[in-house]
Image 1 (cartoon, rainbow, N blue to C red):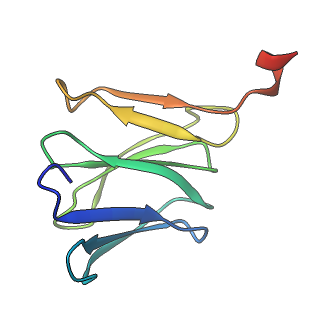
Image 2 (cartoon, one colour):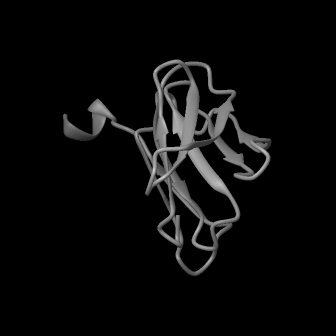
Length: 104
């Protein structure tokens, strides 16, 4: 989180967990991915979380409520392996995946 007080981590069961960094208190559990969650980030303003997973989707979450605000389906043919949120525009998310064809 931009304030440095919260961290998130994805899980193999399709959930994302958010904790207070200083004491480990669980603040929220986000559920919705079909399969492991491989990447995630807070937006620069801290108002949203973007996550990606092996289901090929990118999901946008409200940290305070745990509600999924939007699902981007079929973002990649395979799993979403990385993402980055723009520091200047919190609505801009760049995603990536491993593609064997790129190395042939």
